[in-house]
Every structure is written in C-alpha cells, then in structure tokens.
Image 1: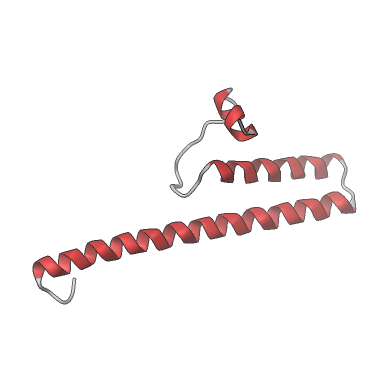
Image 2: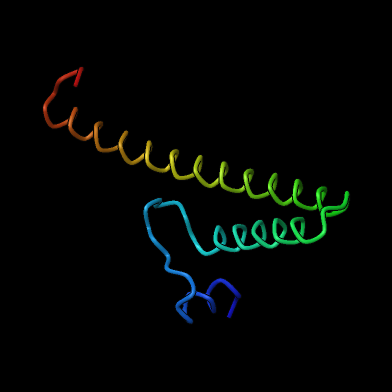
Length: 94
C-alpha cells in the first residue's frame, strides 16, 4: 500500500473530489512537494532550494498534463454528444 493510500486509510487524508482529474498519483506529488517544502524550511541551503524547485516543476507539469488529458476527453464526449443531437434534429447549427 502506498503512503498516500495508507494516510487516507488512517484518516489523515480526506480525498475530496472537487477536481475530477485528481487521483492517487496527484496525492503522491502533493506529498512529495510538501516534504520538499518542509525540508527547505528546516535547512534552507542551496541543495534544498534546488530540490524544492525541481519537485514544484514536476508537480506542476504533472497537474498541467493531467488537466489537459481530462479536458481533451471531455471535449471528445461533448463533441460526440452535440454531433448526435445534430443528426437527430437535422440542423446545422446549435
């Protein structure tokens, strides 16, 4: 069992599903970013700053890609739905 799953089972995390694209791997990235921030606060040297910047960049990149995947899948669903309405009604414009 991964750490985010374990934390959720123990009741330390409550996974709120406000964002439909958010999953367990996103929780892992958030944990990693939080740990890097705590390390930087405890020992603010150049290596911890570099580590924090790298973790932030990776987290942002993962979230951005995940949101884009979700948007693309959603647009395909909406496109199929509007296409079926056009076929049924026989109209060109909606």
